[in-house]
Image (cartoon, rainbow, N blue to C red; front, side):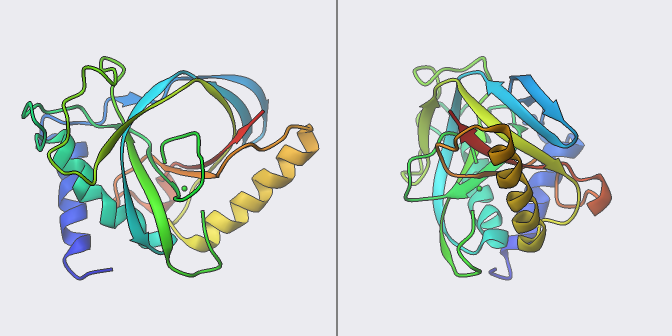
Length: 207
């Protein structure tokens, strides 16, 4: 990661979650739970609209590299100069394949391309969102879909991600459902949140 990336990322998130900016995290992705077993769930998500951007990097660094770009968009770097409320989670997924949700997978520790996204508030539609000034930020409508999910706490590390991804894939097979898309890594907390309080999820679209 570039030396200037971490301070800028942390400062932006501090403003978001501590109230120093009008764009605070107040809304989460809407879903209903169709099946639950321990840390695992099958969820039906409502349609969403996201702002997303593609970056190069490893799993652990890609979100930081993309965050400032997306933050500038919701903070007013758009044609209407509108400020848009921050939502949760921030999603990250491997780029280059058709995917279903905001936001995460890994490639044996090698650098890759990732799509990182912010869910837009439900008060906006694709038609009413202001156009980004930055051409590398795109807006996309996502239809309703079913996702298998695992929730876990801990550090934002590739090791934690990989271990929980394997657990989720195993559970999906046990449930007799078929994956139909790329895993999504979802993070709900700012980087200064203690590791044991962080809410992390991995989501896989299923039939």
